[in-house]
Image 1 (cartoon, rainbow, N blue to C red):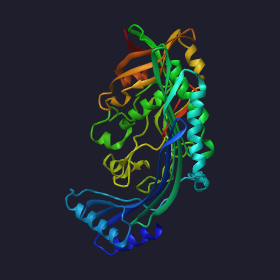
Image 2: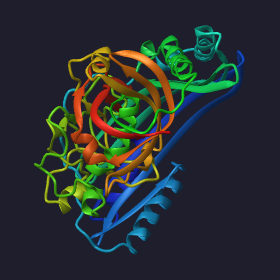
Image 3: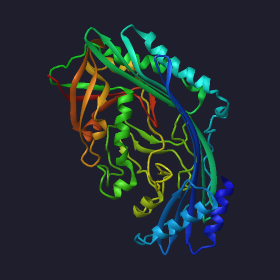
Image 4: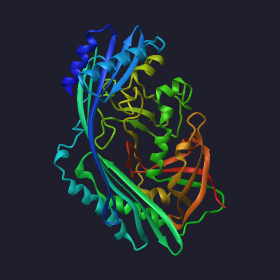
Length: 442
């Protein structure tokens, strides 16, 4: 791939192009899905491609190709030049040579050595362990294993270039628990960077617990109560909230935090970092997809909004420095501001301590509609399931209830942050206690 990029750079340098950058990806992956102890689906992939950004007469052109032959590269470059003609002139710049912070290895060196049979066995173990958890777990709808190895390459007209490789390994399971005529769904998944960290027993147990715990659930009467968002649910909420931190949304007025730098936007107990250097983070990278070195930075520090997450373009428009958050959703996408790893700083109370803090509390273990949170107004309405506790003891499982309000009030209402952090994709959070929310039921 390095030779392909060098050849593409040589072609670009011979043309009337002011600036350019080349982004390349080489990836492979494997996935298997099992059901009733048998392989249902198996898939492998192997991809390679290049993306080009060129500046011609102050206009940015973009193209990409999976045809990495000489002719394919030449056609893609011509397409990028042609596309620049329909774009309004603007000021664009590309990164200068820079050194990333020292990082741990991002790829598992054993990736190529893992036998396919071992991967299939892990998926089968995941299913078997879930069924062993309880006789109430009647069937597993899907148990799957997946992995991937990806190498990123970058070079631009300022002589800045680098490459790095990453790996990921994932498990997911969806199951059904039943008792009498009632049934409940349970799910869980996990993504890790190193094969040795994968744990089918833990994933299976969590999914089975989620389903069995909700058997017999019914709604409570509408009331204003303390609420705990379990770590996985709060991770979903933080992920859904993340667009409000992104520079492009701030520029467009599509963020409820636009113009709020330096202001309190949450209770002082809440601190959130964008951290591309954390070992367990699937989003950890040394450079962003524009060649800017990444670094840990506070987004919210003790309730105060400290930083937006910026690519080079939004940084220039906001007259700020880029933060190393220019990321591409895929080879076919231009860089846009995005999160690397969003990490909510843990507190001191374990989960049981959080539950014992108020006299009564609803622990939300599953939520529907979190991604409908309005990033401009902050309004939300989500369906919830979970468990109602009184004096630290389980009273009954609950379902068919709704929590609605504004995300601003929710963030200011957080009174305790737990110590039970957990990763959900590239978001890590503990459980949090909200002082009071209106929970609608019967």
